[in-house]
Image (tube, rainbow, N blue to C red; front, side, top):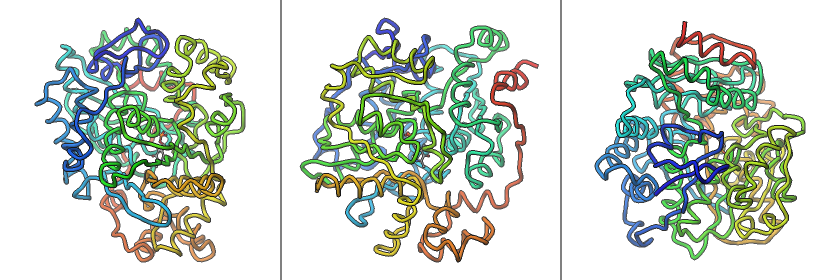
Length: 487
Ligand SMILES: *Cc1c(COP(=O)(O)O)cnc(C)c1O
């Protein structure tokens, strides 16, 4: 099976090559030439635990690994050393929906589901392709990717990692998680800018021929751990298949709190593999570019960037949407992405607006007050506490259900532990009581309310020393990379 660039079908790569490169040479994203169908029945898949099921899904996409290589990667990632739930992920029924808890990994956000396996996929891919240079992972993060990638690559031989994050755009817990990261091969840099600035500059570094040449001469090669890497996308498909096989309704809806469009795209690929999905509800916060896109077929990032309590969804350029656009607009994708880069806007061609794939998606969004009200109501009704990202999805689902009357069984992707956003969560429940308390005093309060034990990830950062303190201007990322590797 081959992958090709969303912008040029002639630029192809095997799975291992696509994993190594991260992004296609023309700046496009790798997509499978054909999305494979599941080759086992749902009844068979329902009998498998998470690692075995993940293997069955991933083998169809990463077909140039031997079964032994892929199994080794799966087992190195999905075990109880890396996850604090013996099933890796689980479903919790609350209110009108099930919550698929994807936050039981080392950094208590769903990014661990993919970033715990990516380093193994990358190392194996390097070996298979005779790459002996040190792999340098460059990552822009809106908060959660950064820590999950650092934890994944920490001390993995033959790799190092540089994470850029918006200095004033992540939660205190997110920032502390990153700047306390140990591991001599890890680098963390705050930028004076937002996530889109970080992402744009990282993309620029990847395609900067001069920089790549100098790195190569020094024995380094760049790769990406961002959600544009198919090594992130493919592992995420597995949990949608898993969730479906635990419930087995005739049809199912998934609601996904969305930022870069990676998580929901994985759900779409699960649909294409054969999971009977009725609707994919794409939930945005107040940065509702995607909601507008699904309403109008126009993608327009020319608007104010709003800092919300769900920072990992504060994104105006959803990179992975390009993969859906490639299915809708085919050869015109490159032109649309050029328009996006130059004008911040593009409109789907008329025939693409009518494409069947688009009918599967429903855009919804939730404002800050709607998000907070949802945390409070679900806590009061069910005693179940959501993080702000999942609460955006839950509030969006309530709106969708009221609007459509759709009663299809629904699973909401629960993307972070409430402990990661303790202040936002507790002030949603009782602003007066918690507003004046210090961040780190809030943890025992959340423990009391939720009855969920303080995760190890939080205990660790409360005591760990700060290791990283570099901050740079938003157009100086390449200089910082050069300082690390070329000086
Ligand atoms: C990254 C993230 C999201 C958004 O996921 P995308 O794949 O970027 O759409 C949502 N919630 C949390 C907690 C995240 O970390």
